[in-house]
Length: 179
Image 1 (tube, rainbow, N blue to C red):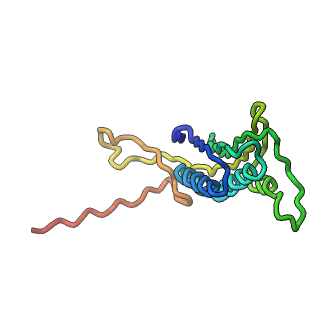
Image 2: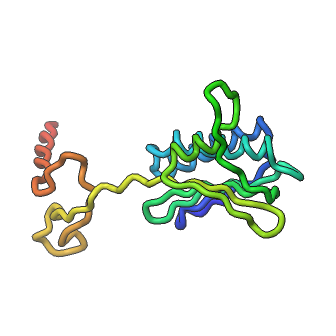
Image 3: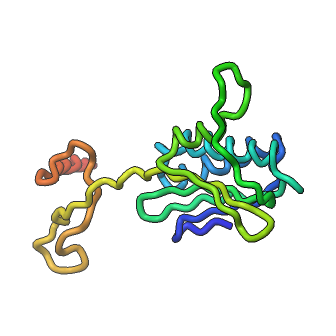
């Protein structure tokens, strides 16, 4: 279920290796749709690590739900599964081939955590700061001195480095058609 207004997306799945790549692509596409391109790589890596942990460790089954939600300036990515055992942050040694998933989540995120959900499950989540929107400035609408629907000012997003007090030069009039 995807709700554009609340910027919330939920996907249920079996955490199998073939599905993890699909969910990574779904999360990436959803973030691009929300114009959160700077968060795509970190969110995709984080959700991959959380789903890999479900695949490796969750019992009695691998059924889980991935949820991404943007509230104000914070993106939260969470994975809900049916295993009540909370994960722990391990001290992986330099040559270990596993056990670094939560350390990676901690390194790439602003915050992370896990909590039990009822008697038969848990939620593991992480947050990323969302990029701020371009500042909004008011600029006069072309022809604002006339009456009608095009009077007053309108809000526009300033381009980075643009002078908000300077309007673009008007286009020259098109050449007269001869005929």
